[in-house]
Every structure is written in C-alpha cells, then in structure tokens.
Length: 410
Image 1 (tube, rainbow, N blue to C red):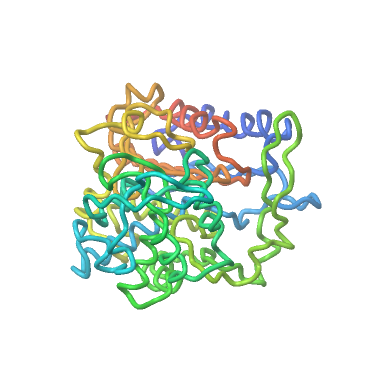
Image 2 (cartoon, rainbow, N blue to C red):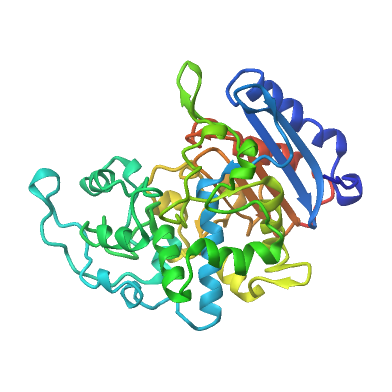
C-alpha cells in the first residue's frame, strides 16, 4: 500500500507513529487482540497504515489483503443501496414498509404476553415507514439485547443468526408473527431493521442483495474482495475470529481456514453479513467522503448523502436521550443518528476530539470506521474480537488520530 507524505496532508508524523506501538503494546502483546489493521487517510490519500498480530492461529502473519467479518459495517452499504432506489423514485422514505412487505400489513406493537403463553394481540398504531428502518426507530430489535419478551422471541426464532437457516421470505414471515417492541417513530432501538431494509432492496430491484451490491456499489468502487459469500480461493486470507473471556485469553470462535462461512449463505444479511478487506472498505469510505463519488463513478448524489448524514432523531435529540439499546456507542452524548450512520451533533458533549457532522459506525467483531467531512479524514480499523463493547479502542484510535492532526480545517 502506497502511503503518502503525512506532513504535507497536515499530520505530525511523530504523533501518528504513536499509534502502532500503542496497538501493539496495549492489545497485541497483552493478548487482548490477536490481530489489528488500521488505515488513516486524508483527502482520499493514505497517510498511515499499521498491521500486527496473526491472521490465523497457526501464527500465520497478518497480511494486507486479509479478509474480515465486518458485521454491522454492512449496514451503511445497505443504506446506500436503498437510497439509490429512493433516488430513482422506486420508493420514498415516508412510504409504509408494508407497501413492499405486504406480510407486515397487520404488524403492531407489543401489548403483553410472551413465552409459552404467547403474545397478546398486537397494538396497532402508526405504520412503520422506511425512514424508521434507516434510523432504527422501527420497533424491531435484536435477540442479543436480552431484555424483553420480544427479544426472547427473536432468539427462539434464530433471527440474529439466520445466515444458513432461512431465506429472505422466511425472515419476513417469521418477523410478521412477533410484535414490535414499540410504536414506530417513538424510540430508538438497535435492531435487525437494516436486514429488513436489505430484503426491501431485493424486492424493489428484483435481485439478490449480494448481486445488487456487486453491480451497483462494489464493481464501480473496485471492491473486489467484499461479498456475502467466501470465495474458496480466498479462504486462506480469512482472519480467525475470537470471543472475549473475562480474565482469560480470547477463545477461538470461528477458524478462518475451517470457517462456518464457507458454505454459501441462504440469507444475505444487510445488517451484518459482509466480508471485506481494509482496502475495499477504505474505498467505500472515500466515496462517502467525496459526496458519493469515487474516481469517475457516481454512487449516490451529494444531497442524498447530506440527508443521510443529518440527525433524524426527534427534536434533535442524541442517542443517550432516545436509546435503551445495548451497543458500543450508546454511552456517547452529542451523537445523533441519520439514515444508516451515527452522526456527531455536538463534539463538546462527546468528550473526545471530533468534528460536527462526523459520521461513523462499527461491527460486532470490534471493527470500526469514521468519516470526518470537515477535516477530510477517514479511518478504517479491522480486528476480530466479539463483542465490540469489550475495549474502548474506537475512542482511543480517534484520540490518537486527532492528536496527530496539526493543520485543521476548522
């Protein structure tokens, strides 16, 4: 990877050079993480790259073209895909979801019951709209939230782990029988909403989600290693995945060379199913930084992206005011939510260096990205440790990167 002169792009090279030793000493040498990759760019030009650790448990060294499970970093891709269809007037943000998913015509909010007794009749209220899916205000949930009877029903139906157990139609029909946690538009709850959005992309386009992504996003951006299915010829590049164990070394939960992801997926999870590389995802981020353009390819319009990166929480609220969900950014004040991204609305309230309008997200295996339109900075971080809430590494990386920025556009 060709790294440009960081100083000509406004960074102090000595300060940038702190990042690698910090990752090595704090996370790799301690055994907290088995592998790391970090790429920082400004104005679409790479200014810092670091990799370390092992790709797989046999001490295979990390490699630049390593493939990672990016989990919820799939969500922004799905959101962009859906907004492409909005641009073509095939759908509108305020359309009811039941227009595309007629199976959900009678879906309503939780009104009691659950478990072996079953749910009480659903409480019908405001119809779910597509904007509710994009903003996670739909009333849907995740089984791993583990808080309510609705969450329990998701776990029983294997909604969170549907890659090999159901099709898109099965997914929609299963969710039609489980009530929403709340009336759409009234609260924020991290959920399978983007998986549902991906199914809507399939129905509106007439294409499997992976095929749509390849034609309209991946091929134009040159994202050659990003897909829902693992190419057998690339399996030796898939990093091992680990799970956190308090007080012990992380345990191997999916071995790259023997991965459960090897069989083709029956369900393309728009909320968390993609595999990708740091190079590929950097291209996606650069496109977003460039207002939807990469090279001579236009993926989405600038005004569409402006709409996506505005805060859509009611009354300009932030996530601490609207969210009861379990996810690794939920504690951040000064952060709203747009159409597929968290958005910094008040940098001072975040209590870390940030820019107003910065947008970001991450994945369950501790991967992360952020895009700062003001400073023209993008960051992509790859590792494979579940869950992402284990360590404050996202905050630490942002602190280290911004502390090395000496020529600001602010």
